[in-house]
Length: 450
Image 1 (cartoon, rainbow, N blue to C red):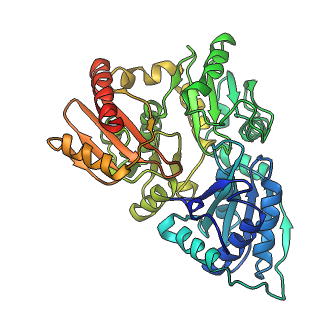
Image 2: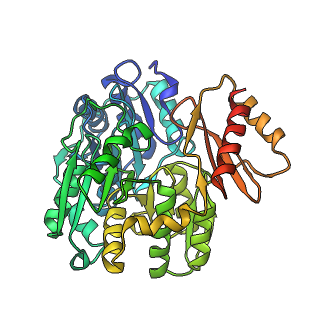
Image 3: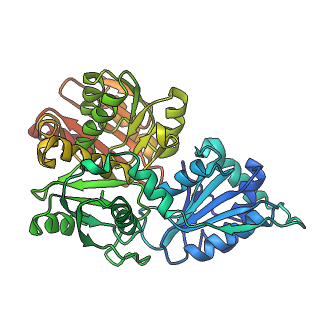
């Protein structure tokens, strides 16, 4: 069948509804997925809160069952609950109908094999593309069955198993779900665990129109009301998730947004304290604080390309304990080598409780040591030409081409890489002083933008 080839991304399928992603495409993807992985057992299917998630999920499920494969329909869930479901119930694979943090007109699919083992373009998505384009798959006479299962409570109990609930002290917490499911899931965990948490709600009711714009806390303009409410409500801290709830972000008690890069060393040290000597995966966007934390805690740093599929593949290959991304993804070996948006808030609450600390104090040291630019996006006419220009200009630095171009000097470093989900070049830069960060940020941007 004719399909927009651009929807097949580096680690998911994503496009505009209904022009490039629609019910016909969803059905074909269901068929192609079955043809590719030849599952022996049920395929778990979930969906996010987007306006057309139900219609696309129905077509996807029909594509799977028409090929004779059974479906475990778990309804509305977060993306990280797919990983839990596939791992916990040992299904033969799983698909989440979601477009993550993209605007409401976007839709798509995140897919895993049994395990759950992530699928990247190189490890399955390109094959799905070819099968969909070929369009020769036939409906079988014997259809598969479909059964429904509510997994929220089991998931909540599992998440609570990562902490000692009795150690959690009373906290007042702003919870910003960005109109996805995270707020409702967090409330369920708090209720089941009987945690002494007072929730100050923000954008907590699910709404697939995303009335305040792109549901992504990583976008600076989306943080304004979040940090204001934390400060105005005198909360102990704030938690925000993207729409499909697999990325999580924090705000300290002073109303300062805490970049994941600055909080990740706390999680790294916490994990390595329990599991000394293990490997920890990081990506090339920001690295210095992470490498410091890993080495200080007796761990082994291992670098990976950016993106959840690539990081999961690397974790499995290295049997790594843990992985972090500066974009808010956090990965655990004991969470089936997958990312989870709910374990980090539990760990931070436990850490703050046990150490009687405030969130601002946890991150102040590393924030005063390394200064970061934030992720800055630029549209350019020729990505390869710009990357080559950067390599030439900064050839006297330590150059790495693992993912785009990374260049390191003694006092600053940066990465420029193409987005896997959007037509952009992304710059991230860190330096050992604020002044140098700003100077080099502007210098590299001038090269990128010509």
